Image (cartoon, rainbow, N blue to C red):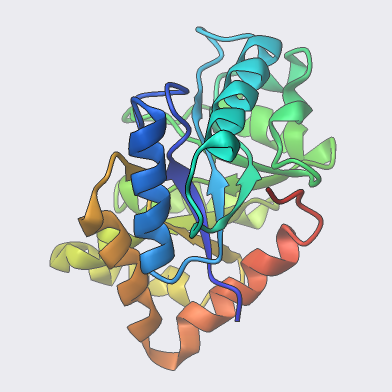
Length: 231
């Protein structure tokens, strides 16, 4: 089984997840210690702050810093983004370049607002029509208030990712349960920011989920990123 952390912020100075190359190498060592074979770099992309070209240059430079650093034991890296959804982002120049490199898979972050409007749903539907494989980041963050909205987005073709630390929150377990046996749950993530061993420990603990849930989700993750370029 290939263990894949689908959601992590370790690219140096690419967002608030990592301030330096040395911190990035420490993060990668923690991920390796947690048994991660592949980690997807998902720096935050904010449409109101970046152009796609600027963002791509920034994360490429951050990757090059890591590749030049002296870190012998680390997971292989796939390059993606955590894209904050805005209405009509599907029309943004070059938006599909924010898919995980080598794939059509895009990690989408929903806004932390009380109501998700029809414009957001239409935008996601338009991305799906373009052939983008939409994965909703950390759906656990929006439960239970947006449970019906999440179910609707899964029904129209999106997929889901869950953060490992949500399983440490007893009150949230019952809200997560309906999604754990759903084939549309395709990824787990540490959502690692900084050298936070708690996040990587929580991720490794997922291997203990009953009914081989962890193994089944890892198989789905490996399938959707099978063509990803790895560094």
